[in-house]
Amino acid sequence: TVTKYIAEFHHLSPRIQVVETERQQVTKYIAGLDSSIKDFSIAL
Image (cartoon, rainbow, N blue to C red):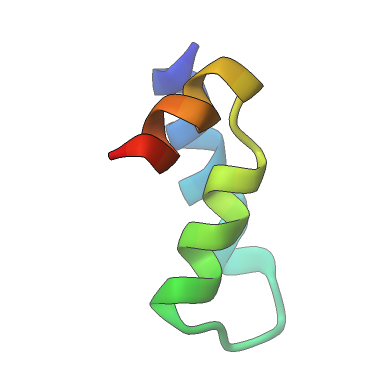
C-alpha cells in the first residue's frame, strides 16, 4: 500500500549516507512508486 511505502521510505531515507536535496528525495520517492500511481502523481 501507499501508506506502507511512505513509512518504509521515511524509515530508510535517514540511512543514506549522502546529503540529498528535497528534489532528489522526491525523485527517488516517485521512482519507487507503482507505475499506475507514479503516472497519476506526475500528472499532478
